[in-house]
Length: 154
Image (tube, rainbow, N blue to C red; front, side):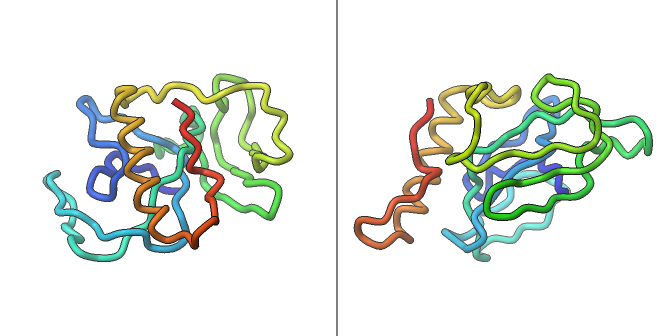
């Protein structure tokens, strides 16, 4: 599991100060654009390479203490109905959930909790990221085809 701190050069959330970490994210599995120049020191500049779009899925996982690695999820798997995460996290989205959790796809999700505000992104930035992603993804859809993650949930 990656713990991205900045995805600004691929149209995602920017680097924050102080640094914050998103312990689980999702991206398209196909390129939708190209990587912009990296403006953050210490990272490789992958300018011009194909890149995916970051999707609007930001579960909050608390880091575990067992390994001392400052991680939450260590493994991810899924099928057509669920994405499952396993690791050393003690909570998921503010609820006690020790080390194993699953997230249902939209069509079977209980929808008991709505989207939560990202801790590290300003609401206008989140909307701009969604609109940027929608424009990039829309260019890869056939006429009349809709992507389920392009709904504006602001």
